Image 1 (cartoon, helix red, strand yellow):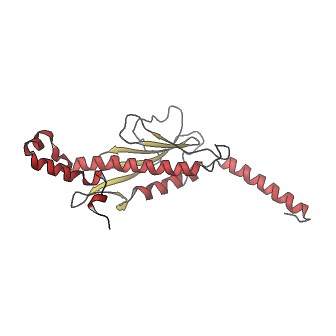
Image 2 (tube, helix red, strand yellow):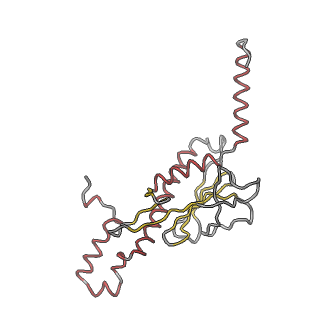
Image 3 (cartoon, one colour):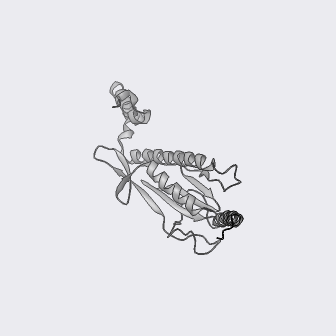
Length: 216
């Protein structure tokens, strides 16, 4: 079982503020040291922490995934980018498809897919309702997706603890990142290259069987 010393600074920072307020109660009012008890601020801080953890997970998954790409010669690598002028929003990109993860409202993290169409989507921290439907992004090649995005919602517990939910169920950053990274990798797979690779493999198998006097 972990001890108090094992807690991360973000987890035990409140005790330091409480002690400072005990020593300088007037400073607490002037400097608003007690703001960490404000539910709205707690949600805002939790949002940044959750987004940061999501991005770290995606970055690590991409690093391992891209390691199999042999410097991009086997398949297109997954890229993770920050979204400018935002606290922690980020974007995942591959084969002209974007996965956008952004804080779009207080206590809301929105996750959505979008096809990269020049001039069709401005990445400015605002999500425009794009998302996946039955594994498809956009109804036609080159068309922007016009489907619904999915939201993670922050909830304040009875003891001011913040947890994140999807469709009413508690979720952790790791499981969210794992699910969406896998979906993104499958969705952005270059099927043309895969089919070409499969055909080469089939041709090799066929040639091998013919050498052995068999037929495919």
